[in-house]
Length: 323
Ligand SMILES: [Zn+2]
Image (cartoon, rainbow, N blue to C red):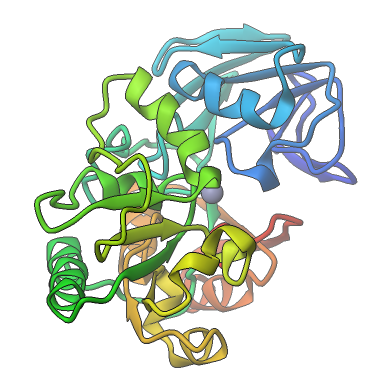
C-alpha cells in the first residue's frame, strides 16, 4: 500500500495525517527545508529539522507553531514513524523518512551530495519507495568540481580588483550565498551582502558556521557584492552599476540564462544534485519505486523506466530556488 499520495495540497501521508511541503495551508505540515516555495504560511502546525527552525520562521513569523525534530530522532505521528535526515541542500534541510508496518518511504526534498561547510552532509537512506527532486534532471547538468568553480570565482574577483572594478555576484540568497561566504577570501577586498542575504546569514552564524566578514559600508574600494538574482536592477544595487556581473547557479551550465540577464560571467555552482548525483542517490536507496517530483519530471522518469526502474511522475507546484 502506498504510504503517500498526491492530494490537492501536495504530498499527503494518511497514516500520520500530515503533508510534506504542502503548497496550501493544511493541518500538519512536515517541511523539508526553509526555501520560500516549501514554507507556505497558514498551516496549523509545522515540523522541521531543529537546525532549520529559525530559517523557517523567517517566512512563517514568530507566532507559527513550529516543532523542532533533531536529525535521526524518530517521532510517532498517528500510525507513522517519522524521522528527518540531512539532505545537504541548505542549513537544516532534511529528507523525510516514513515507516509503517515494515514499509519505508523517503521524501528527499531538495538535496546535494557534494560537501558543503554551510550545510549538514547528505545522509544516504535505504527505502522501498523514494520521492526525489529533479531540479536539474537532465543529462546536460553536470557540475565541475566545486573547488574549481570556487577558485574561478576568486580569480574573477581578484582580476576585477586589479582593474579597479567591483564584482557583483548573484546567488541564491539562502544556501548558495552562505556556501560562498564560507570560502571567499576576505583578504582580496571588502565583501558586501544584500540585505536579503544578510537576513539569513545571522542564523548561520548563530549556529557556529563561520562566514566571511562583511564590510559595514561601501568605502569606494572595489568590492565583491553578493546579491540575490531578484535584486538585479533594484535601488540597493545602483551604486555598483559599473561593476562586472556574474551568477553562481546550476543554470550557468547552459547559455540562455546568462545571456538573458546580460551577465559577464557564469559560475556553475549549485545547491542541488547534478544528473550523475541524482542517479547515484536513487541507486543507493535501492528503492523499488521512484517518484520524481518536479514541474517537469518527465525526462528523469523516462530515463529510469528505460533502465528498468518503476518510476512515476509527480507534478509539483514548487518554484525554482536557483532561478
Ligand atoms: Zn530548495
